[in-house]
Amino acid sequence: MESDQRYSLDIPYVQKDHLEYPQLTMFQMVERIGKQYPDEPAYEFYGKKTTYRSFLQKIEQAARAFYAAGIRRGDAVTICLPNIPQALVCFYALNRIGAVSNMVHPLSARNEIIFYLNISESRMILTVDMFYEKVAQACAAADHPVTILAARMQDELPPVLAVGFWFKEGKKYTRFPNRTAQQVMQCAGTAQDGEGKGFSHEILPDMLWKNFLKKGTSDVALPENVFDKNHTSVILYSGGTTGTSKGICLSDLNFNALAMQAREAIGVEFRPGLSILSCMPCFHGFGLGINLHTTLVHGVRCILMPSFTIKTYADMLIKKHPTFIAGVPTIFEALLHMPQLEGKDLSFLSGMFCGGDSLSVELKKKIDEFLRDHGSRIQIREGYGLTECVTASCLTPRDSHKAGSIGIPFPDTQYRIVRPGTDEVVPFGEEGEIILSGPTVMIGYLKNPEETADTLRPDADGKIWLHTGDLGTMDEDGYVFFRQRIKRMIITNGYNVYPGQIENVIDSCPDVAYSCVIGVPDPHRMQRVRAYVVLRDGVEPDDACRERIMEELKLHVAGYALPKEIFFREALPKTLVGKVAYRKLEEEAVEESA
Picture (cartoon, rainbow, N blue to C red):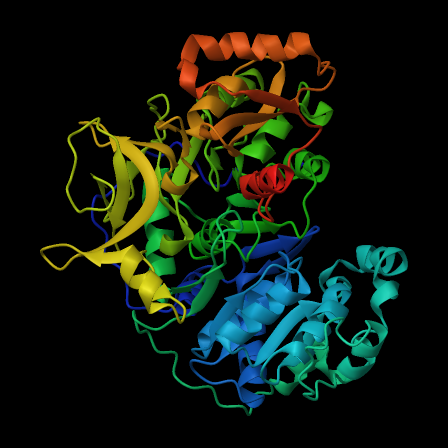
């Protein structure tokens, strides 16, 4: 077991209402803390710790390699990696020379990768060897030449684990990247749809990441690292639950402001000696913005998890004793039932943060009770935000909570509740669209000025407001309450029905693990309400169970909003970051009714 008690967390921490944001790049923020604490570990990967001194050296070498390869300020490079050390080094190396990190999920489909490469005009892509073949197919079908770099997991593992990984997994991929994309295309049936553009994408052995780094010799002179708050440094992509992905252009200021605001809102003095279990992925705003950048710029050690299962997460929690954990509701709901945690002391936790999806009132109660039963004095704290402002911009306070609230805004972030489609602020307690303004708000959507203008709107004083498309309320104390995505609203017989409210009631039932409510096309009602329910282990999915759920719903939900159907499922589809993919369920329902 690991626990670092050199630093006390009981020192009173006074949150500031306004912060001063240094004119530094993301790399410079990490460099600043690294020079202050060079011998402290920046990150850990399967027990192998890397100090800030070594991390900065790796970043500088990678930056020189990219520069020697012709990558310049404003050029995009796609990072298609899980949470492995090469992703961190590549990210900050690109920022060091002013290039753009185009963050892509390595499990993305081939055609999705083609889209990401084309819209970002990426000149290079770094992926892991096990995904090389798919990436090579995508590059061959891109509308411009793309150079492929391949990283190998075993290069960053401790020696004993590296050997074990090679025998178990790694040796299957040693033929990559020692083949040309043309050969890959032939093996894959010429890209399956004939979209190959005929570009030469030959990947030689020295394009392995570890060999590519050798190009970063000390005689390569790097340019000055320039801060510009209007410069796009990172491209992230919107959801996966709401239609076509949009590239979201984010700046150094956006990420650095988030890092400083989050520290204030969390209310714990981030410092060396503390750690976070970093399972949220680097291609997601929550993972990159909170789990990685926010912690790295304050000296908090990131314990990297490249893949996720609830068992490995529970095992790492017990073994590593992280100070902080952050994840989505499905992760924390699953933790409640992990046998490894029975009787374990979790008093080492000083922060548990939930984002990425709505945390129901009932699930929060269950998790808080679980924490108390396991010796922890904390509560789970819910954040709210969008990738359009990197990630969280609102958080429940450390020592207080209002039922159903997503908390209060971060310092220097203003929230308003307005009448949908207008800029008219509604009275306290009245429902409207959540809009927000502050230094984390995106530059705009990539190559999409119409959507940008529709989402980022100036008020009468010229201040830019991000219109979230979410419904919510605010009370007199400034607490914000999320209700529902506007576009997710169900209209049945002329009534507005909000799925999240119904899901909260269903999830409160003792038999239920989690649920999802959607609107199904109906010739008479326009839409009818349908609930998909995943039951707890051992609960029989029968009519009696369905009736128990309906009886509970009748106590809390108006008759017109009651589900007409309750379907039991062993599991529900999830997005790549763990949210319930309600869009897939809606698509199933449309096909069914066609």
